[in-house]
Length: 103
Ligand code: HEC
Image (cartoon, rainbow, N blue to C red; front, side):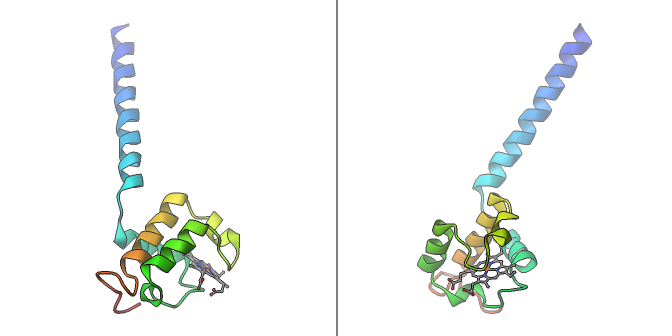
């Protein structure tokens, strides 16, 4: 009985730690990851850098949730990854604090 409750406590701790990590990842932005994901998943078709649009333009495209080049390119991404990509594009937009200097 004692061993069972120890195992249960350990399991609960593991589950708690795992969900906490996901929650943090979901809410924090990681511009490096966004850039990496963009290069990996989007750059084959998109060669224009983040500074080809303004922050408002990136925001509008992200909000619309529509990909003119075909829904499947976005649908195969997780929401979180797509989110990181747009964080990156937004942060390096033409009118951002740090416009991208090279693609
Ligand atoms: C298979 C090729 C392909 C892939 C992969 C792809 N796109 Fe596209 N995308 C297109 C085409 C084609 C268009 C429509 C023509 C255009 O606006 O350039 C488009 C349009 C867009 C637009 C709107 C551009 C505008 O000027 O309004 C955005 C933003 C965009 N894609 C972002 C992405 C992101 C982010 C990814 C990666 C997750 C991605 N695309 C992956 C082909 C692709």
